[in-house]
Image 1 (cartoon, rainbow, N blue to C red):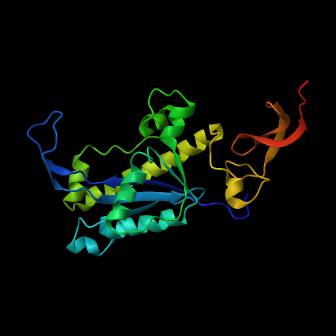
Image 2 (cartoon, one colour):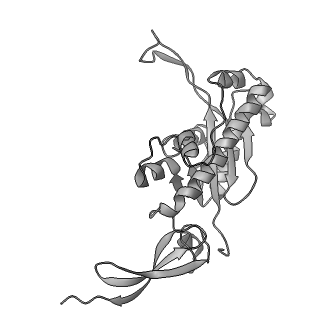
Image 3 (tube, rainbow, N blue to C red):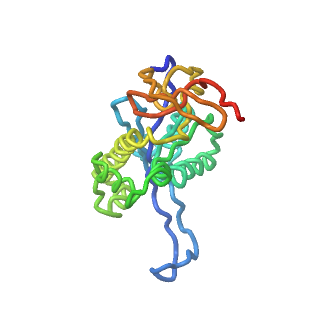
Length: 252
């Protein structure tokens, strides 16, 4: 394995809804926002570690006097992203990352240190043709598991009302999303030819660029327009990658 293995964080957030005025129910424009959304909770785990952690509003003393103030939850997430070298999420480029950065800006936090972003929904769309790219459908189709059934919007209403049973169920729901997304990421990772190169992050060019393993096998040769190169495959994650150039191909 890599001597100083890069830290990869898998995370998922849950937020409250906007509360607003409309003139009707179907396809309405919002007249006025009565109450902005805030972060309810998030779950996370470090790739390769067993434990999935959760952080929610009731975890902090601030919740008793200001139950909608997500400052401490957001600060904890900032610390984790600041520590990470790579961050994995499902639909995270469109939702989790942008929502998270919105709360960072609201609470006057600076950007965390840069990290590589890996969105498993984008991986599914780019390299495959699944019937659905939703996390639950992908988990079921690939035999990885499934999401926790929330029972619908009442779970969110329960959390917003301070019901601890709802908070406990929300934590289980969010934790399962993270655990399922980690399994999905590991299943799809070998197909990624645009995966962040761990060798570059670590300064090590002797290991698998996708997972960091040194269990590498030479598997024939490849040819591009200018050279012939050693073809390699990782025996841990099954990723294929390019080795050293063997010789130049001279044009006649």
